[in-house]
Length: 567
Image (cartoon, rainbow, N blue to C red; front, side, top):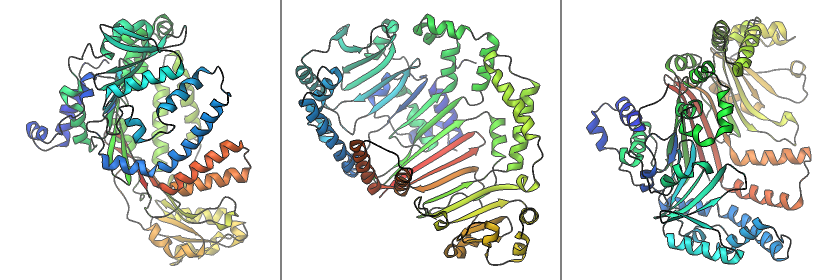
């Protein structure tokens, strides 16, 4: 189904009305005015867009530049080595090396806020990344276009040749493409902006005028203020947000009369014509299940960055997915190495998948390109019809909290907590007693304190594991010092917000573990590359804090929140 409505109608009406209890006029009064002039170039019905509504404050960018300076210093050392190699003649007749050397000379041999400012580029620049049809366009505001033009002229002088500049109706631009390559890269310095795009060379006469700002959209994201309206409704900041219209993307490829099909030429048309009307309809029906995604920064401070991604899902499917989520608590916050939680009703998940697979078998796809999905459905039904132990069907979720892990040490040195959340813990313990010799001697059902599981049951010498059964969970502590917190960990307040997966981990420690595992496995690397990676790792370890991801289903779709903190 083609979309005839624009983004203004989508986000300006639907989102605002659903998010606010005020009338539309009152809601619009609180919407932030658009401060990004680049949005005037973005069609309101663009296929995808990610842009700023306001620039990031200097006090925030200054902090991040300072924080990343050690990484930039490491990069500068690599730049110095390249320049020394270049001057010694190691890259003789290498065209790309000549360009790189000229650019680095212009930057003063480093990438910094100061060197970018010499090119007329500010870290407070507005930006807009969007689609012209399906082809990408990137615009970045410039503080001084003259500085950038002068820098390009100096780079050309250092390279010893001039980049050929073309012109359309008095506006200059650069076109870069390999011989016989149907798609070209286009660059232009326009009024207070740098513009870049990629699109078919055969479509220049149709797409160049809009790229160069000689043709402006009748209705733009600037005139509708659609991103600011969406930001207000969804809780995004103005520092970056966007939309991907999956239905429109599909239409551009599936509709034989679309502009994209016309621009891409005969090769693509021949491939797409192999899809008969039945195939096209079935592909569209799949896209209709998840027609659109939005994303945006939820917070940006000197020490924290938050992003949210929201995939809209067809209502009945979204409700079914939401029903699979249990009330198992989310991952805890703290200074753990890693904390994670999976909150899924395994029995319901089995029935849900079985229902969907049986429905596909009852009405299989007719399209030849989708026959593999029919085969997968048949195999899934066969696998799901194998009887599952009752204790598996009763599983509601699992949570872990790991405090210590050393890949170079024995596994018995690990420390942490584990909780299996089940509908009937006594059934789970009963099954374990029948299946594991000696397990019944623990008598977990009548224990009020964690009891140590004998090494004879674990079959691992030196591993200390303590177990406890609660009203809705069975827990285990690895290491005696953690056993005192096991009951509280198991009985953490349950959730009911649709979160089915959450993970929180220490990014710096993760990098240290990955490096230790590489050393343990004795991965060989070149000395220079190893020195560089070690220096970067050290710089990142010094500044990285924690990363947290929370995934949840809602009645309207999937929401993913990601938060990154810095030291």
